[in-house]
Length: 418
Image (cartoon, rainbow, N blue to C red; front, side, top):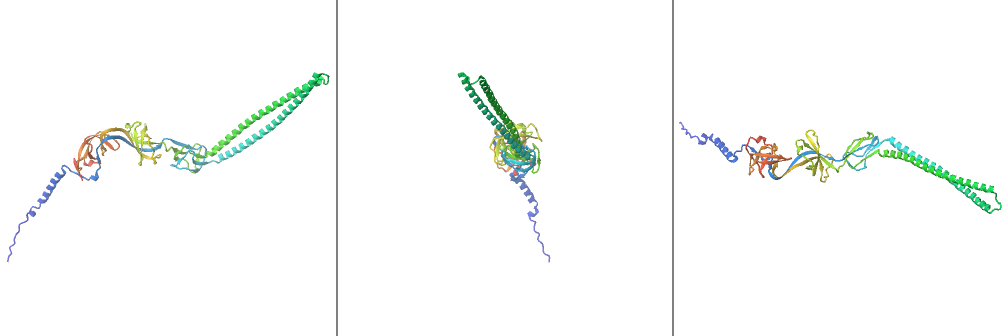
């Protein structure tokens, strides 16, 4: 027996299944249009860098890197030749004036000092012996003077007695004897005077000999002193206090007269040497304020010299340090300097965006008030500082912009931030 089949009609949703994707697509488009507006690109907030426009004092700075350098550097040289026997210091050590740096060895200088010492002792002994001989002769002459004076006085007494007898008369003494006595007195007086002159002459000779001996001893002493100084100069000492920058000699090396031993820098009188791009040097003048960053501290200073030469596109600017030096300050310390070339009291400025040149009109993405979208806006820039740029028009204080590289977003007028 045949069974009649009942044909069920097809469900409408199976018949028109293709309408669901169409409705979904159209709904999504309508939702996107209503919610995103003209947005055609979505960017994650953590992928872009934002900056807020501020208003107030705007310092225009030029940045440069460089080193701390000593204002005064001293060169220490060897005053004698010799081989290096001992080295007491290394670069970076702090030394005081007179502190030993290295010790040299020169046997000839030591022998010369010993010989000069012996010669000085011999000269002093010879001088003393010669003076003693002359002083002995002077004593003998002085005795002769005393004897001549005694003889003169005795003869004169006899003459006085005979003269008194002659005056009394009586013929007790003959005139011949009286004349002889007178002659004898004259002779004794002349002998006495002659002996006195000999004594004075001997005294003059002794004084002259003493001066000559002293002069000779002084010459020998100077020779000995010079030899002693040469021995002392075998130990080379620091001429000034400061930090050792360089040691030129090594142990066992032969040092010639005048050879460089070390360089010492006065670590208390440092300056900053900054390298500035030649295109920015035109804005720098003497006396401008500078902030030196040592990575740990900041030091204030001022420009004291601008080099007239350009070296590989850079110009050296010397900065005098005005504030107290921090503990880490030392010669050849890497630093960064910011030179204040201008100061505008009231203007708009923002952290400098990528590819935003000064004094130009650029397109920047400005965030909406709800910070969900960013819209391209035309902004006119002014002068630039190290990390900031002046805003002339197109933005107001409080606006937030994207400052990271958005070159690939230029084709979109509006983007969404999520």
